Image (cartoon, rainbow, N blue to C red; front, side, top):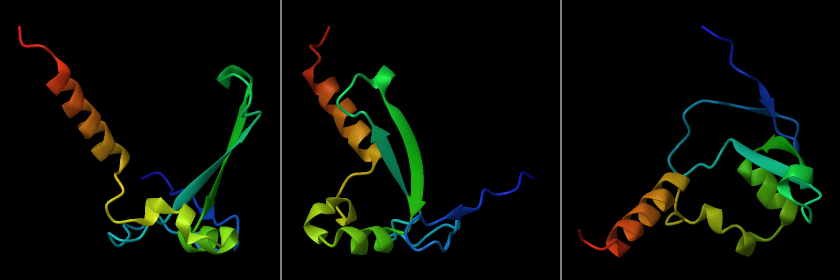
Length: 94
């Protein structure tokens, strides 16, 4: 069995667990820093940082920006399914 990667919150410096979390928990979170965001993708650089959701929320101090925490905010899979379903409805029958 491969060893688990140990992550550390970039804000509080405490460890982040890979344990299955409660359904309403957003941990662990990843923050992607993209340098040169005004350039083409091929000229950009990126680095991923990890954190607890609560640490990030406290850092930015504004809950109104964090719609990701809303229970009805779609996961990537849910969003993809919606897009696929909409595309199927737009196709003309053959």
